[in-house]
Length: 180
Image (tube, rainbow, N blue to C red):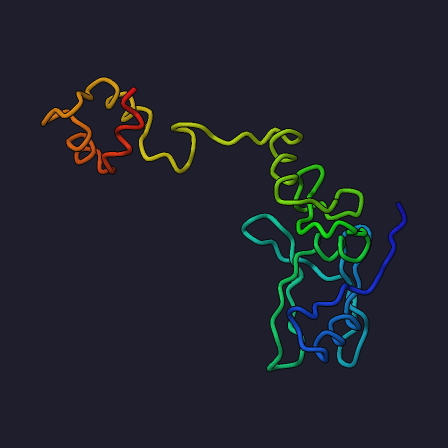
């Protein structure tokens, strides 16, 4: 695939018209998901090295408008999609077809709704939600859940939901979910 370059899409929703003009005239985005700056006074231009967010997405971090300007961190996959992929249905999210958040090439991106994006994650990429004790938000370990199933006696002073909850440091409603 031949690399094609276009000016970055405008950011009028974030920038003043003057800052937006600087943004559009200063950077270009490619079909391979790369960003380059154009030569200007004091800079030679060239391919920009993206930063990586904790979520895994690559971003272009820059400052627009001089010393007192605005700091920006724009997700590269969104810039590529806005520059090259038509969005006639006005879908709000950009989906990585292969699930690789670092692969921002044109052919790996598509516009999607939040629902389509979630379904793609589960059905195509096989990202199943963690269940029970494997879920990082689980309140009890597997050992504790087994203990509750073994010891729980409704309304008992020592082994009722409230007593077990105090012992394990959780809310009594959590015990009622694990009682078996």
